[in-house]
Image (tube, rainbow, N blue to C red; front, side, top):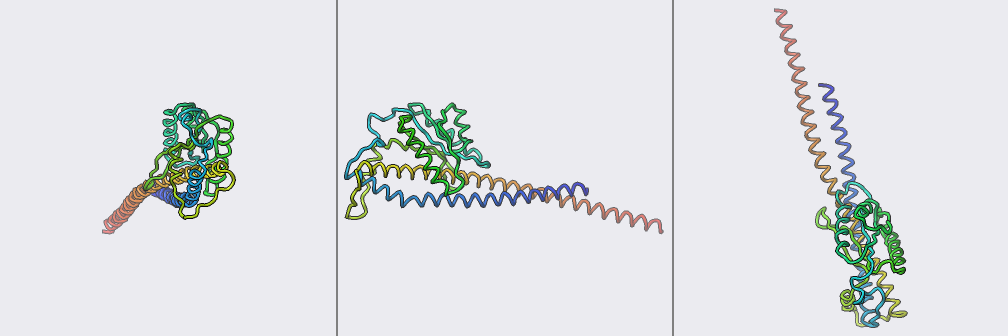
Length: 297
C-alpha cells in the first residue's frame, strides 16, 4: 500500500506542477490578447487621418494611379497572397483553418496564385495544396515586431509588383470573435477598386478650411495609399496574433479543467487508499490486542 500511496503522491505533485505551468501560460496568453487588441484600436485615429487625406486627394485632384483598379483590370493577371499563421504550439487548428480558407478562396479566383506565408507551419500546409510559395516571413512575437514585419512585406510585394509578377494582392488571416473564438477572413489589398475610391471620396473633411495638397496629386495619393496598405497589413497581423493567443488561452483553459478533474480523482483515490491502510492497521492492532488478551485468560 505504501508503494501505491507514494506513487499517487508523485502523480499529485506532478499534476500540481503542470497546473502551475498551465496557469502561467494562460495568464501570458490573456495578457498578449489585450496588447494586440489595443494595438488594433490604436490604429483608429491614424486610419482616420489617412482616410481624410485620401478623400481630399480624390475630390480635389481626381488623381488616378496604377494602384487603382480600372475596368479592364478586373479579374485579370497573376495573384499574390499573404497568409498569416503561427509557429508556436498549443493553438489547435489555427493554421489549418486559415490555410484551408485561403486555399478555397484562391481556388475560386482566375489566375495562378503565388503565396507568402507568415510562419513555417502554415507554409507547409499551403505547400501541401500545391500552391507556389513565393517566400516566408517569421511570425512576430511582440507588438513592437509587427511594424518591421509589415515593412518587409511591403518592400517585397512592391518589388514583385513592379516586375509584373502579380496584378492582384490578397491577405488572409484569422480574426478574433467573442470569447476565445476566431474566424478566417480575407481581403483584397490591390488593386483598389472603384467602389473603394468612391467611398473614400465621400469622406467629408471635419473643418471648413480644406488643407492644400502638397507636391503633385499623384505623389500624395500614392503616399497615402501606401499608408492605407500599411494599416491594413498591420491590422491583419495584430488580429492574427490576437486570435492565436485566444486559441492558446482556450487550450489552456481546457487543460486546466482536465488537470483539476485529474487532481480530484487522484486525491480521492489517495484518501481512499490511505483510509483503507489506516483501517487495516487498526484491525491488526485490535486483532493483536484480542489475541494477547485471550492468551492471558
